Image (cartoon, rainbow, N blue to C red; front, side, top):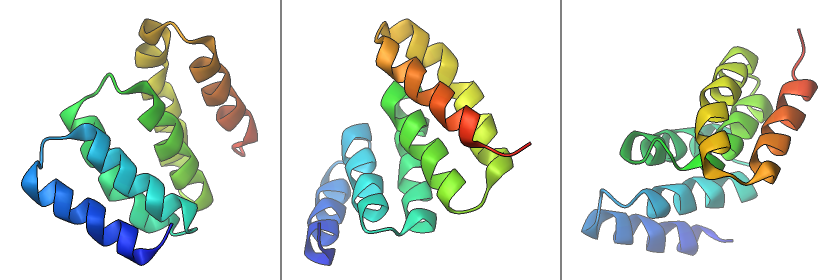
Length: 105
C-alpha cells in the first residue's frame, strides 16, 4: 500500500467518480497507511454513492475512532446497523458491535 497505489486509485476515480468501490478502496489505502483523517472523506463519498455498502460503515467508524472523533464513530456505527442487517452477514453486525464496545462513554 503505497502512495503510488493511492495515485492509481485517484486516476480511476477521475474516470468513474460514481464508483463507490473505488472510493472505498481509496479510503482503505489511506487507512492501511495509518492516515485515518485522510481516509474519512473517500469513505464518506462511498456511502454517499451507495448507502447500503455496509462494510464501509465499519471502516468509516473505525477511521473516526482512530482519528479521535468518537461521536462521529458512534453515529456511523448506528447508521450502519440497518445496512448491515439488510446485508444478512452477521459478521458485519458483529464488527459494528465491537467498534461500539470500544468507544468511550
